[in-house]
Length: 172
Image 1 (cartoon, rainbow, N blue to C red):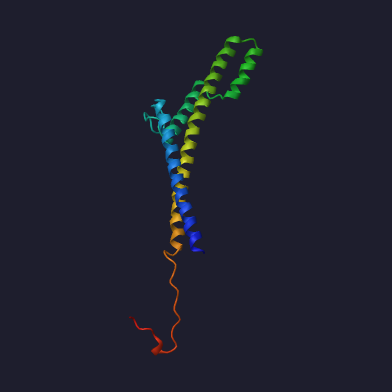
Image 2 (image 1 turned 180 degrees about the horizontal axis):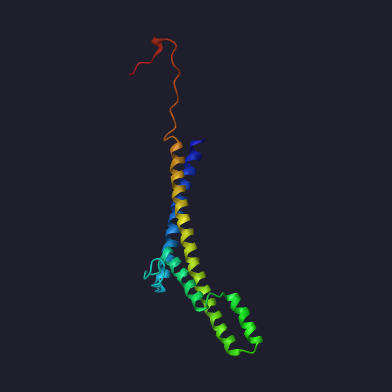
């Protein structure tokens, strides 16, 4: 491999790796800061991290899970789509009170779904940020390896070996 190509490739990889690590870290910090500003705490009845502030991937996931449990509890386990069908049935039967109650439950499930999607977006963003940081670290390591392939200086010209001992140049 041409030593100058190895050096340039290595340098580019090191710089790109550093940029990836910085970009991933900045993304992680941005997500954490924005989640923390919402002042959300994982519900006390969560299966894991109860009472924890939602400011990281695990607490965001825990809160998303417990929101789903609460929504299903409020609707007796019925989903948004199922409630839509029940609302239509109640309206067709002329039971407006039941239709309004079911529509209220449907709004609850819709809001829960929106909140869960927002929290899951944060979880995925944390994963992408971690991936970018990891790839950046690998890229930087590969860059260092590439640069190690290139010799530090060009080798000196090799003198031909004299055929006879009396032809060996003596130091001055």
